[in-house]
Amino acid sequence: MRVLLVGAGGVGTAVTRIAARRAFFDLMVVADHDLARAEAAVAALGPDGSRFRAARVDAADESAVADLLARHGCDVLFNATDPRFVMPLFRAARAGGATYLDMAMSLSRPDAERPYEVCGVKLGDEQFALAADWAQAGALALVGMGVEPGLSDVFARYAADELFDEIEEIGVRDGANLTVDGYDFAPSFSIWTTIEECLNPPVVYEAGRGWFTTEPFSEPEVFDFPDGIGPVECVNVEHEEVLLVPRWVKAGRVTFKYGLGREFIETLRTLHLLGLDRTEPVTVPGADGPVAVSPRDVVAACLPDPATLGERMHGKTCAGTWVRGTKDGATREVYLYHVVDNQWTMAQYGCQAVVWQTAVNPVVALELLATGAWSGSGVLGPEAFPPRPFLDLLTAYGAPWGMREQ
Image 1 (cartoon, rainbow, N blue to C red):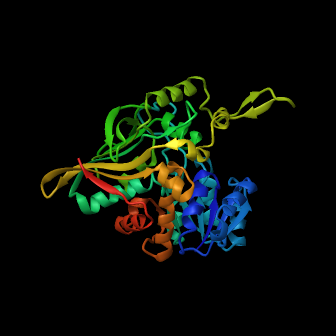
Image 2: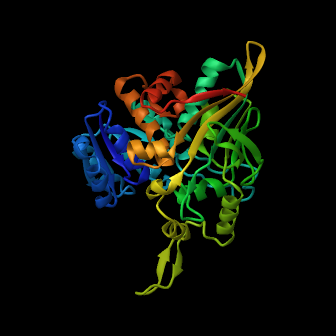
Image 3: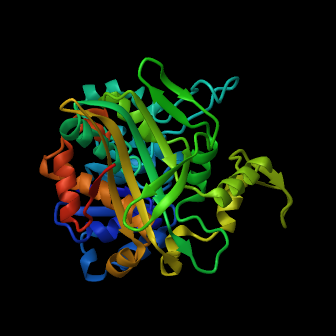
């Protein structure tokens, strides 16, 4: 396997450090719009970096990405950029005859008239619209294969296959007790992506009704997270699992709720009130004349890079899938989860916990594709594959998962 990894930010860098310890690939080209960042990611591997190369590429330039695939003979395109670049990289992979993998799907667009009732363009719709082309070509696009979406979807499939006869509800629940020294507000993940998923209308799925939307931060609940994290208030946000799980797993209801906290929610609401969540450029004065800038990009530039916060960060993060239903005629409720301690990831990989947890899952998936344990064609989510090989290999990577009977 020869991999083109596009994106050398926090998650991309974590991918290289995890993959460097595995033998399933021959070459990984680390490409970024900032060549120095790609070179730094490779250089940090030291003697373990012999199978890695750095390159510069504009993720929005489909022909340049396809050329880079051909130049290095890469048969996989691994997208580690933010969701704005999903479609150009998705199309470049198809044009270049490569398997495609991403951790977030094509962006949604809310309904213009009833955004908090009905869906407009849903997450992943643009990719699934091209599924027939991929299937006819015998090519695979594995979409939404990070931690959430990704591992959370594998958990949903595992629950359906091995734990339940009928599932009434699947709810992805994400929470943490992470703190960052020296900052009053320092998100542990991309603020661009966080704003996107938290301020867009959340999507809920119900059998018989299909997908519909609600207001941001709706249906608050307190969820008790394991391994000492404890109770965290979680609210509805837009997330890919709700769009992926029902395609392959039969369930009465599917939701995604994120443990944000009151302060974080109020900060996001203020950004929205001021229009600072907008992606459309606004014109501002500059030293050499007017400059067009995206307000959301300005917000991101004003905050610390999440990848640099590891040494100041303390605590754990938990990704998991809560499932309620019946087994052998009895009611059952479980929480399948994956907890990562920032102290451990920093000591073992030099990466903060959230980016490491996001990165390890697609690397596991790549290894399963390389060995043939996972295979398929078309545009497929993690639920389309057998879950047990993934969960076993994740444990072998030193990142065991858990299950709690509720």
